[in-house]
Length: 245
Ligand code: SAH
Image 1 (spheres, rainbow, N blue to C red):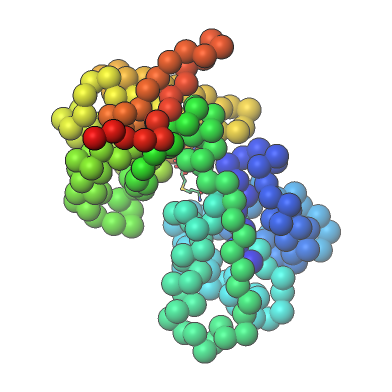
Image 2: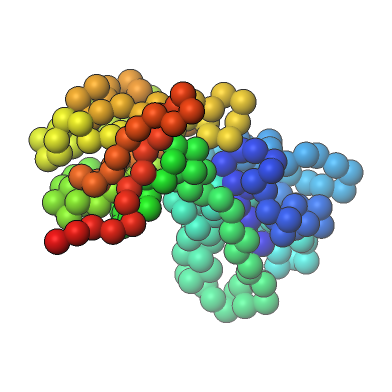
């Protein structure tokens, strides 16, 4: 099974995933995520570093083939910039070898949905989702997609906006946004959503700065229709359901 642990809060973990974890003999995943699974007798936890997805997928498939009940864990949803695609990628290289392995993907609440819910309803109309990390694709492709999304006036979501090894990407992203959108376009910085350290910061594009995002932040960008106002002492953002001609 390939399971999504949700954005952080236990309340957001589905019953289905909880049951899979309770029945597992082996948990496989990036150490930050495996550490969210409570240890118990009879459970073997295989934690690995962030960048070894293929080896991790192979390990999980081999364990499953040997009869173990394996759960590969990802944060949020496992199909969103996470392990599910890596498992299928490995599976496809040798379908015969893995023929007897049952695969089930158990969904989780992905970060953008938790962040959108916390900030109002910024994804109420059409939107587009980008992973800003250039670890697995060239920066030129990110830039092209970003520019086209701006042109199409999508609301946007950026996963992996910034990290210590990629300090310049988000700075460039903001420059491109500032060139293509008006200065009052709402930008939502949602950090550590659903955990004790959660912060939601909604600012106009003119005030958005590169250091407002890190690896624990998801960034939501309004479309030209997105509105921001105060309700019960907090700022909310929403994108109306319709666009008029
Ligand atoms: N599979 C995950 C995404 C993994 S990519 C999911 O569906 O949510 C990792 C990126 O997700 C982080 O850099 C950040 O942009 C975002 N993210 C994950 N959890 C988050 C949280 N609790 N709050 C804000 N952003 C989060």
